[in-house]
Image 1 (tube, rainbow, N blue to C red):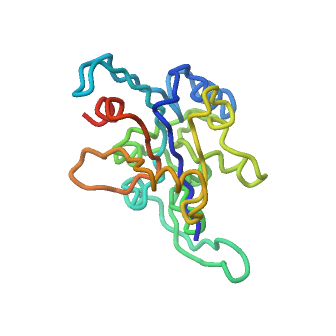
Image 2 (cartoon, rainbow, N blue to C red; image 1 turned 120 degrees about the vertical axis):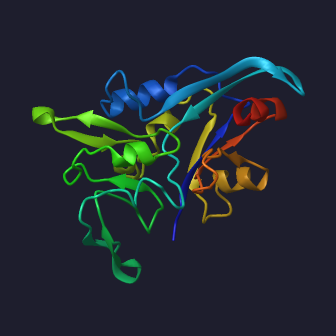
Length: 213
């Protein structure tokens, strides 16, 4: 099975916000919220000297997403894939797709309780207001709608510095796999447990120090 992932090369990121702005425009994200955002670390002192790190952040599509089991919506059986890949599993209003590893949300079934928003240790979810004031959880889904047509996530396509890479970790020759082989790291959840983020960062020691400290 596939596991889609993203790698951000901190050495290249300019802090220009192009990724966040493109995402906000494409998916009509409210001004005060974000699916993709830029976090600035520093300037500050590191063992390697003064440094600043620009860190794009989004849903991490965790191996064991804490947001999924807290959804109170009654699970219903759902079929994924076709033919030999076809598999069925019960899902609530948010789930991890067993075929591609993407954590998804069904706005038609979401009741807007906010449980998943509170459960996310990366603060990657928010409640989006819809018709008649009804709220539903929203977040990065790696631009699944675009992936299904053979396109890449809008943040990757709009990165001016070519600092964002997207691909399948099951493919050892993919750019994301090669970055992992070279030592890309993932962000800790800071909760004492590791949900297994699938967004990774690669950078110089000073940039990683700023991000991880």
